[in-house]
Length: 175
Image (cartoon, rainbow, N blue to C red; front, top):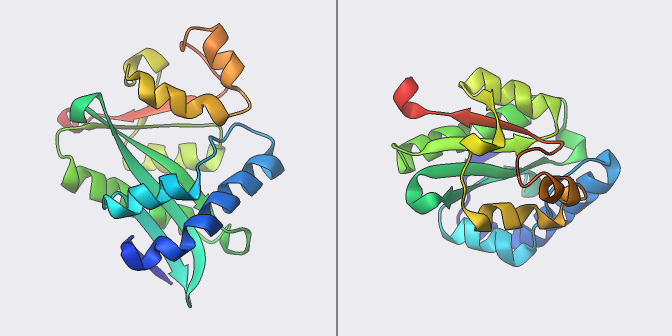
């Protein structure tokens, strides 16, 4: 299993990754923002994606987004193919994503929002703390990214104060 910063040779997996995110959203029945293969391609091209590949088969993925003029970095799109779940792959992908973020954006606060308990546990182990949404970026473009989530109406009704996701934040200056 190779877990590495994605490069141009991994662009061939963009459609598979997009479909995996969509499929997981349907199966889980929880909020997951959908991402097009074109969107995923830009993350790879910008050196802001981590991919896991096993014998030339897609196994997992996560990407980095920069918000608030570099003040915040979000980890999004963490996905593991069903046949590789339950083997610690998500934690390995997330850990490399976290370390890559700290190296590339050393002063940024790192955050994520999730409904998944396994991701919450991984984030906690990496040093994230649960926070209210007001402690996350106020960049409207970030919140627009939630528009494909089935729970987007909750986020809008509460003026971005609450949703079914849990916000988690890592602050480098506090470490």
